[in-house]
Length: 254
Image (tube, rainbow, N blue to C red; front, side, top):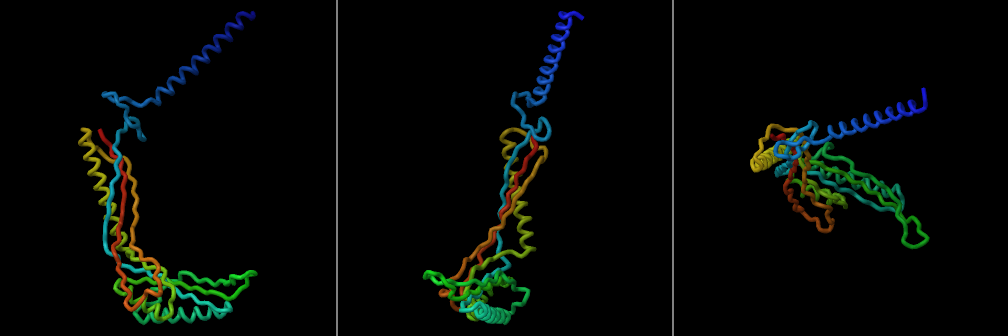
C-alpha cells in the first residue's frame, strides 16, 4: 500500500470517529432537555418527565391541658470528709423520700437524676481541700397536678435544698392523641392551601406525589426555685401544652 493511500484511509477513520462522538453528544444533551408544554412554559421535572406539581406546607396546632408532672429536686450537703458528706446526704434524702411517700407517692414515682461527690478547695493559694460536697437529685413523676405545690413544700420541709425545675407534660396516651390531631389539622391546612392556589392558577389537583411531616410538643416549664421564696402551699400553675405539626405536601396537577 502506498503512502498516499494509507494517509487517506487514516484521515477518513479519524473523521468518522469525530462525527460519531459529536452525534452522541447531541443525542445525550437532547435527552436532558425539559419538555415544553403547548403554552411554551417548561414543565417541572420530578421522578418522571413532565410531572407538574404544587408544593405547600400546612400547619396544625392543638392546645390541651397537661396530665403529668415531672419535678426535679435534690439534697446537697457539705462535710470535711467525703464519707460524712455522703452520709448526711443519704440521711436527708431518705427523709425526703419517706415524707413524699406519706403523701401517697410510691417507689414507681421516683427516679434517680444524678449523684455526685466532689472535693471543695480553698480560695487562697496554694489551694487545698477544705471539704466535700455531695449532691443527690431525684425526679418525681405524678399525675395529680393539684399536688405539685404540696410536693415541693413537703420535700423542702424534709430537707431538700435544691428545686431544679418543674415540668408539665402529657402521658404517652394523651401525647399520641394530640400528635395525631395536630398532623390531621396540618394536612387539612395543606390541602386547603393547595386548592386555593390551584383554583387561582386554573389547574386541577389530581393526586399527591410526596408528603413529609414534622412534629414538636411545646411544654410549659417552671425553672428552678429559690429555696428562700418557697413557703407553705407554694402556688404552681400548670399552663397549657401545645402540639405543633407541620406537613409539606407535593400535589400533582394538570
